Image (cartoon, rainbow, N blue to C red):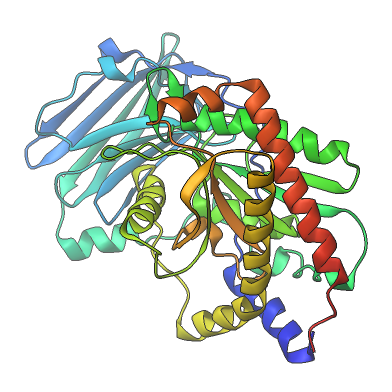
Length: 407
């Protein structure tokens, strides 16, 4: 690799990175419970009043975000299992959802019907528990935008990019185990696709654990998971986990469902701003929108120079990614596993946008397909698919190690 290329890769690591995450910490332990009957969300003039009764006091915070307007309430930590029983005025909010947001923290998201800012927020405690009261008032678009743009407090914000490790050398320039980052899609307050009692988040975590075990047994790979529990991990943070682990390859695992039409079989996606077809574009938009629904703002932060430099880094990464996709497709078909008629496609998934790590998104099947559901819930099929992915990844690594260094 040329000195300039190495510089570009290192600079992109600083520009594109976010936090080394702690997504492997435990799931929610429900320190506090919501008393839905003693809670309420109601209109208050042209504003909003939120009252939440908790079994005990816990650390918490409140803020607003834009695009669309929404109120975020973060708690460490609250069990929201009876949220559906919370009384809500019909015109007070547009939507309400809650779940695990980051390890040991839960999040309540309220979609606001119009721009509002926090006029009052407090927690009153007693021997009986705690009452959280938040009052919002109507605000102008400029006032709301200013409130939504306020920076996170230091203890909550992402660490500086300079604290992250440098970009990892290509396989052709080093020895040691292959570092594979597995990304079970969705999780926490984002279950992904659902079919009956099945959820995409649970199925992908189960499969990722089986794939991790298959890779570790070879002795040739080290495996990092973006989540080990049923927690929410933002898309950009999933990429950051891969960078912090100095990953050689990133594989995001999904199993979507189609509202219309029929499709079945596994599909491999690599990054492209121009999707290969309309269905791929729709799928990418839906995956990215899951972060917005969780209260995370995915607005682009990089400027023109950063985008140019990242694109230059991808000039070296894209061919390696293409070879990875080809190796996975060959291994899956060799294992006599059914694939979609368009087995390898491209789309603009945010989770694939690391500039210096070959990354693919693998739709193992469709929950809307009866045969795919049967496969995804069958341990024998999961073991066969995990074996095929293991074979494909390791074969790709052998080929990459044998390639001459870039000039």
